[in-house]
Amino acid sequence: MKKTLAVLMAFSFLSSPATAHEVWIERDGSGPARIYLGEPADPVPEAGDPEFSKLTAPRLVADHSAKPAALVRRANHIEAAVTGTGDVRLTDDNVFAPWKADGGKWEGVIYYARAGRIETRSALDLEIVPTAAGADSFVVHWMGQPLPGAKVTVINADRWQKSFAADDQGRIDVPVTGSGRYLLSISHDIEGLRPLGGKDVAKTYHISTLTFVAR
Image (tube, rainbow, N blue to C red; front, side, top):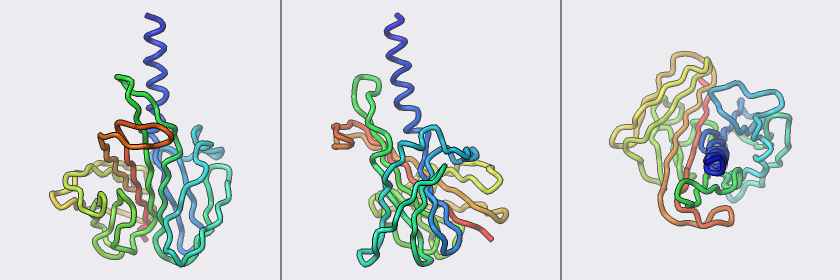
C-alpha cells in the first residue's frame, strides 16, 4: 500500500508542474522581451518560479532575415534582445521531460508564447491571433486553422481571471476593461504517438499564451 501511494505521488509530482505551468513573453514598446515560466495568475517571485531553472533555451521564432536574439538569464526571467516593434514568438519543447501517466504511457508538453497583437498571421502550431491589428477579438489557430470551441483563459492587469469558449470559428472577444497587460492562454491536448524529449509520448499537451498591453 505504501509503495502504491508513493508511486501515485510521484506521478502527481511529475505531471502537475508541466500542465499547471505556462511560458509567456512580456514586452514594452520596442524594448527587450522578457520570457517567464510560472503560473501567470500569481505574481512572479523575485527569484523566479521554483521551476524556472528548467527554462533554459526557448527558441524565438523570427523571419529568416533576422539574426537570432541574444538571450540573457536574469533572476526570474530570460531577457531576449529582440529588435523592431513587431510581435515576438517562441516555442519550447524542452522545459519538462516527458513523464509517465496512469497506465504507464508517456506524456509530454510543448509551450508556445507570443507578445503583441500587431500581426494577424499565425506562425506557431498553437497560437492566439488578433482578428485585426490592435483588436480585442482573437481567433485560436491550430496548425494554421481555426480551432472551434477552444477554451481561452484571460488574465488582466489586476489578475482578474475568466475563461471563455471560442465560437465555431475559433473566435473570442476579450473584455478589455482597463489599461495594463493582458494574458490569454489556451491548452490543446493531442493523443497519438510522437517523439518528444527522447521518448515516444502517447499524449502531448500544447500550451500557448499571448500577452498584449492595453493603453
